[in-house]
Amino acid sequence: MSTPEASDPDPTKVTAERRRNEPVREPQGRLGEFTRRLRGGELGSLPGVLCTAVIWTVFQILDHQFLSPRNLSNLSVDLVGTGLIAVGIIFVLLLGEIDLSVGSVSGLTAAVFAVLNINDGLPEWVAIVAALLVGAAIGGLQGFFFARVGVPSFVVTLAGLLAWNGLMLHVLGASGTINLHDQGLVYALTNQYFHNTAAAYGLAALGVVMFFLASYQDRRRRRAAEVPYRPLGELALRSAVVAVVAFGAAYVLNQFEGLPLALLIFLVLVVGLDFVQRRTKYGRRICSIGGGAEATRRAGINVARVRVSVFAISGTLAALGGLFLASRVDSVGQTSGSSILMINSVAAAVIGGASLFGGRGRPWSALLGILVIQSIASGMLLMGIQTTVQYMITGGVLLAAVVLDSLSRRSQQAHGLA
Image (tube, rainbow, N blue to C red; front, side, top):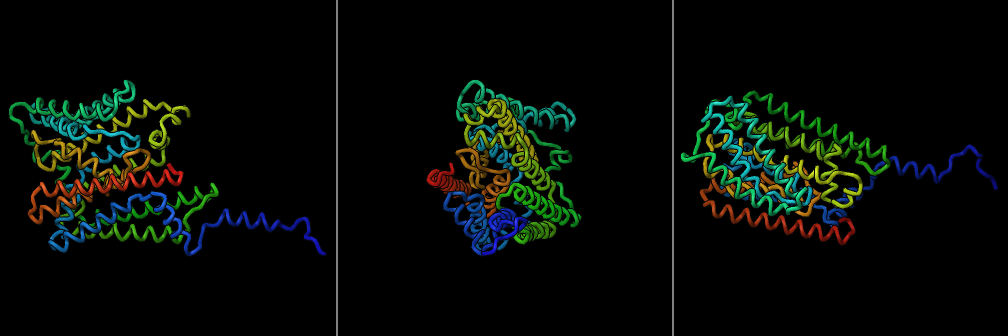
C-alpha cells in the first residue's frame, strides 16, 4: 500500500480552507437564509416595503394623479420634516425607550426661531443655531432625568409633551402665529429645487456607487473574518436594483421641478447617521444598551452618558424637523408641534422596521415608515377624504406594525435569538 509523501497537502485541511474562503453558492443558499430569517422573526424592512407597494397600487387605481411627477415630488418634500423627527425616535427606540415630547419640542424650537428672527431681528443663521441648541438642551435635560435620576422615559417625555407645548404658546405670545420671511434660509429649505437634471441623476449615481462600495467593503471584512459573505454577482444584482430605484426617482423628480433641497438634506443626514450607528463605537454602544443595559455596563461602558446623548440627538433632530415643518407652511402657530406629529413620528419608526423593544432599527427605517404614512395622507388629500379617516387608517397600520414587532420578538425568543 502506497503512502503519500510528507509534502503532500492534507485533503481534509484543503477542503476546510476552501469552505472558509468561498461564499455559499448553492441554488437554495440565499433562499434558505432568507427563510431562516423570516422564521426567526427577522422581518427587517419587508413589511414596510410591501405596505408601500400596496398603498401606491391602491391609490393609483383610485386616482391616476397619485403617481404623477408633481404629486411624488410634493410627497418627497412633505415627508422630510416628520421624517427627521422619526430618525431621532429611531435612536431612542434602539435603547428600548420612548420620547413622547418630540412634537412639542419641534413646535417650541420653531417658535424660538421665529421670535428671535422675526420679532427680535436677529440674523437668521443665529436664530437657527439657537433653535437647534434649545432642542439639544431639552433632549439632554430629559435624558438626564431618565438616565441619572431614574425617572422612566415615558413619564419624563410625557411631562415634556405638556410642558414644552405650554412654553411654545407662551413664546408665541398673544398673536399666536408668526409668519416667516418668504426669501429666508428656512423658507428655502422646502421651496428650493435644483432644476438642472444633472443634480438628480448625479445624486442617484453617487448613491449607487456608495452602496456598491460599502457592500464590497463589508464583503471584504467578512471574508477576512472567515464568515459567510455575499458573492460578487449578488452584490452586482443588489446594486442594479438600487440603481433602478435611484435613477427612476431621479427621472420622476426631473419631470417636475428637479431635485428638492429638502430631500437632499434628508438623505445626507440619513446616510450620515446610518454610518454613525453601524460603523462607529458610539453607534454599537447604543445598540448594545438596547440589547442589554446591564451587560453593557459590566463591559465598562458609561450607559448613563450614552442615554443622555441619545435623547439630546432626538431633541436636536426634533428641532431640525420643526424648522422644515415651519418652512413648509411658511409660519409658526399654535398648532405647530401637535400631538399627531409625535404619533406619526413614532409610527414611522415602527412601521419602517424599528423595534419597540430596543436593539433593532436603522435611520433608513424612518425614511420607509414616513413614506408609508405620508403616502396615505397624500392619497387621502387627492381623493378629498376627511382627515379623520386618515387617522383611522394610520392607526390601523401602526397597530399592525406593533403586532408584527411583538410576534417577531416572540419568534426570536423561541429560536434563542433574543
